Length: 110
Image 1 (cartoon, one colour):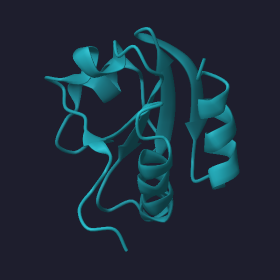
Image 2: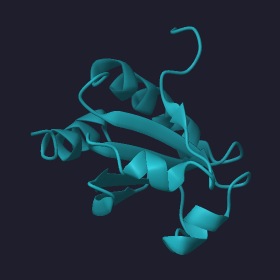
Image 3: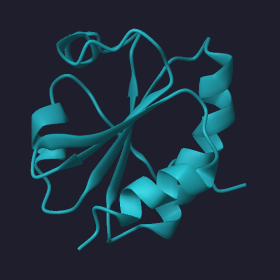
């Protein structure tokens, strides 16, 4: 098990700066009480390790930060969104296999 988190903590305050990265950005919208979120959490951390330098991987706790999830109309978690140049280009709702997330990330890496 890796020590500490490789994924960046996304907040209402840093979100716009985060998604305007020159790299593709994957944001995992989650909550502590959400079972499927806990299932996909380790996968998101693996992606943060594996795509270090190629993509930005972030997690946003929807209980602590409600402005951005409201802005994107997030009603189900986990919701994972892929951003490129500040625009949402892909979205997955629910716990999905790692391969699905990898496919979506690879499609955005130039």
